[in-house]
Image (cartoon, rainbow, N blue to C red; front, side):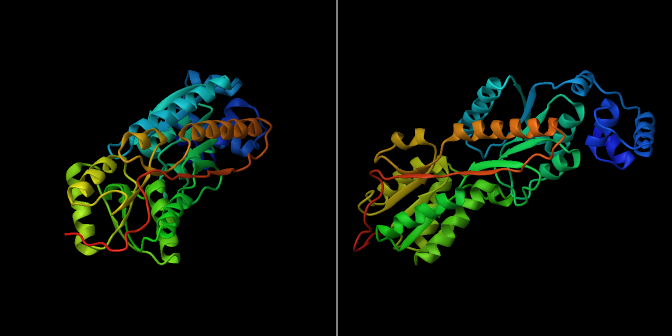
Length: 345
């Protein structure tokens, strides 16, 4: 079945131009109108009920593209999704959940169908293939995440680079000089997930500025993979006394493995986590952590999308917004001054 995007490509115009021809909302040159109408006839395009409704009024539906991956922390993703849903209801909008396994084709399907007035993307990669599709279709969109090229879109995210820098600063100020960054599984970095790469980049840059020697080890978050990562760290850098963990699944195993290796936290080894607030009280000792408000991401994304939709209704170009939420470092019992002498097996 042909979509509005197919018609746009066949006619050599944008999807928004096709919409203007079909709805009559904006004047279009006679030549462009003929091309679009010819493409509609050739392709057999028939606007569905949602698209016809959109031609006369808004659908009052937002499409939320949520991640369907085994390497994401599901509770946080669901917290963001719930926040989007509740914020959308305050604006009189409902939310249509779409899984990201369809990629750009899923975005084209939703936008081309006219079911949703706008789109919110989650789990954004640095070179996200869905972003060019949004631009191609002229869709109004907000991203929870920051791609390398955010032109024509509004984005909100945690300032992950600053979060990584806070971790390096904290360990440096405590006197640690040999530190390790325990990150996500290799697949997260291979697909260039923004939250992982930006945190590591911010940590690396600040660590180098503060004169820290550091290693980065990927970890799948299981006990076995955490044990392997720690073993490699201590084999390469036996004097490591500071650990940064950006992998929710690895926090508990790391604390347990440090204890079983004869290292007391924080007297012998300091651990700082980048994790949701609800996790920090679940471990002993209580975690020093860098956190950020997940609910705020959803609220800001909805506000950004509402602003873009309102501006587009006035036939004006929506303003691109970039909002980075400041991370918060809370010092608890899992970090302390670097030991003067590290003599461990």
